[in-house]
Length: 172
Image (cartoon, rainbow, N blue to C red):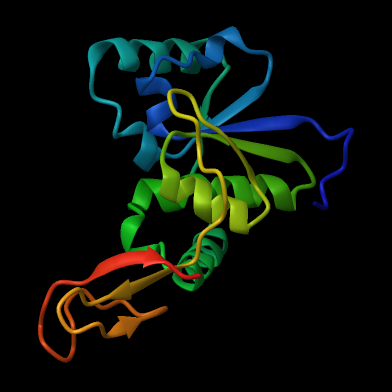
């Protein structure tokens, strides 16, 4: 990993971190969240946590650059995760990419396994809140459970041979 040990850590929050009770106001670290991830926070308790952190300056809402977003989409296409990431998921990883490019140490707080997988492929650390997190990196392939056709790196939802909805599994 090419991060410098002395660089400050910047925590990138996915909505699941706050929804599962993480309070950025209780930490000394800098916290960032994308507008799309912040907009996923709907319940009153989580909104109060987020709003308090914003007011006391422990959380900033930041939009990632188009370049960082494209970089994430490119990696997610290669891993087979792209179709399983929301805009908020992509923006969350893209913020971490930008932080890393500034020479800082990003860590994404999320329980989303797909975010964790793509981040792992980009050498970005993740810290789960309510789950154990992923155990290993995966590259996914789509397959047809009816005829056995396989698809990798393609944005296909139904089998081109028989029309059956595709499933996904880890490539060995």
